[in-house]
Image (cartoon, rainbow, N blue to C red):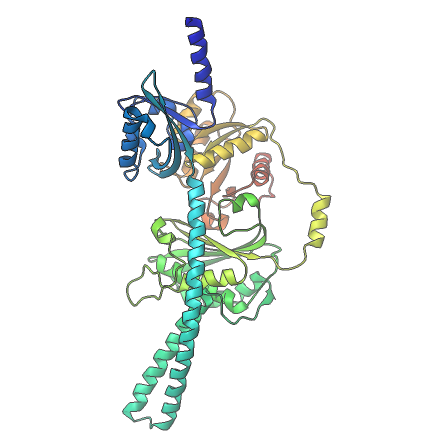
Length: 513
């Protein structure tokens, strides 16, 4: 009997440890008796860090009262206790994670088994879709209001001009009518910007070389941002054509540069760059408004104050502004959003408080792809494999760390992973073999990727490095975060992009874009 019990326990332990779902076992006093290795993906804690601690330590204040009630019911009245519900957990970095919890009672040990399915990404995507739908609704409303208001302004402007023609310039009425006309014209500018957000502006699309169009505006843009801010221009090579109104390109850049100027206190930099990009299904799964295809990406990066998450959620809404009263209408970024959508594109924003902001605008490629498709058919899709080299990956985002490790292992690399620089340095103290490459995030809490590389090269002088960042390469270099010549891969990246970049760095190829 004892042997059967041992075998049974070993069997269930194997299931517990190897299930693909994060699972914990909780004692009646609330302490965690056991946790499997999948818990790390959801909580950021290793199993041994969880065992012996109270489950309440990992639940948000919002979900805690409900979970206390359900856990109590599960022990005292299991038939009435829900077995499945959604809760908000708090991971090792203090971030809130959405999870579906499946709860069961182990009667003979009086313990609860809790399985946790992380649905954070799903909820974020739903929030992005809701935001897109909200902006669509606001756009329709704004368009209708602006159209009606423009009709009234037309009457006001017309009668004011007619009145001015009937009165002498030295008459008090002349001054009053002039003020009415000035105010009406300013109001007309506002309604036209609302129409831009609503995608109802009258436009004259033309096939454009975006590089040439932007180059013709650079002098004007430099004057716009002033002498204290350096404007840097990084045009992409062999840029695809786009079809849009050149005046709208000007509107986009003026609004983004005014926004950048306001975000920079004193001296700083603004980088404008263009690039050809291909958007795949994988990217679209995490970006609600994106869709697959070939695009010209226009990026504008500033070294300003950056924006917190609660501001980012509203930046494209009309009349939303963080500026003081009287210093802005809140229509600049709404206009950018409307123009991009009117031209069948989409826009993403990447921002860090105290670091700066990057706006990435994706405009569909114009023209026939027949020749390019023929070339692609003749050139098979290949992923360069590794030769068993050892790669150290340092990334403070667990999900990114996990997928990067899986990608590298799939293409024949040995991978060492670390969530933070101090962990990487400690791991390498015990590492006896060779280290060929470090793949590290640029910005991390303890030290930058650049600082980490300097420490690593004290032991591995010939160590090669590839940096990861959500910012564009030119933005990272011009902001002084990396030196020119350092190699960078921009998030998000595909398996092929990662494989190609890693191979190029290891082999010292100069063909690194």
